[in-house]
Image (cartoon, rainbow over the protein chains, first blue to last red):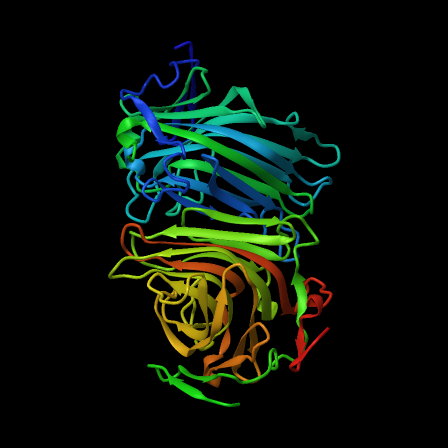
Length: 295
Length: 295
């Protein structure tokens, strides 16, 4: 362990620590890892392995072609007069494990294609931000209030490769990444309501990776739950994992049911025609701990 | 009016009258259909025209290609029985009184079990415009109780003895009896219209004749059928108004059961009112006024 960064938040529950440059990839797993899905056994999304959901997108794709899962998500900002009082319009496209409780290690090979994300060219009443990202999530425990149909108190670890544009308007700064580049961030958040449509902010733990990934280049994202160590480990490719730690007391009982699996998410700036988040991604192989594999 | 069939529901308010072989196509409408969407003005789904969504499922597709919208939805059974849909909603449904669209079914598979058939509704048009709940009844947001849904649909069941690739067409009007509309009462219909075949284009039409207390439903240039309702059924606007095109599956509760449909949505014609109504050029000469085909 080369370093440790501790984040102390105002509330007693939300304490996080980050372990930088720590374990080797997947080190915390005490179980072998195998192929959960490579899209070769069937040319369909198997219902005994996966459940798909989407919300808020205009174009959506989730299909198996050529031994790969193709996913697309496209969202425009709202421009009609009935604009809600929200700065952005959210969307997601998910593929979740049917039995998420048995998966505590997952790594997924991605390749992002046709990425387009843009915000408003001029200042608008609210801060215009657009974002598109693809990643993976593990939801393993709950701090008490959750139950059937209620994910309140679930803790979701996420690692996401994403691209964002922010336009702060005249006198502000247009924040954008170099063309074709996605940054990578991992975080641990708590579900604040039954459907987990809102999560804690700031997150319990968060880490911005120094590594970036590129459009049209394959990359691997990894998440491991180290229950004994009270942490999740997150990694990009063969780089060392980083830890998202949490207080032992938060792990009261198994997670209630917020999704674990592949997440494709985006939001687009409202109030202007240029607000857009759009990308396609190929998912090539999903690996999990062997006890989580559905034969 | 050549025939009249009266359908008396189980509750006093819900009485339906079905008038098959009634008016000429679009007869009840006093305005022509106009082109709402022909997928030529943009290479993508326009957020100012459409508000899509779906239930949990496996594969899904919603993309514009070659001036057509492709929609696919596959849902496996084996879990709790229910209705699972992929929806393409008009963005301002309260302004939509009539919808006509041209479709082509690219693919359809429906698999059930010996004791329990599945149903695949490859495509349907829905209008939900009014409710029979009095103005003093408090309606929770999202609750469909009391709303009346008119529907024209194409469907095939897994135990169908019809020739391969054939789907039946029906029209119906039903009242939702619970918030999710999983319980309902037929107000009018179902009225069998005719059959359609996969790989062949066809047009479905649904028109609300508010002054006449009826809907009209039609297939291609066949005569419309009427779905009548008692005046008291329309006491206020629907709580969850929608005008939409949907794929809907009812997979059986057994392993291996599934529904899978891929359709082309070609031209969509509508009569819309309100500030967000897009301008239309006239539905490519296939609109109808007072029973007279234009162009």
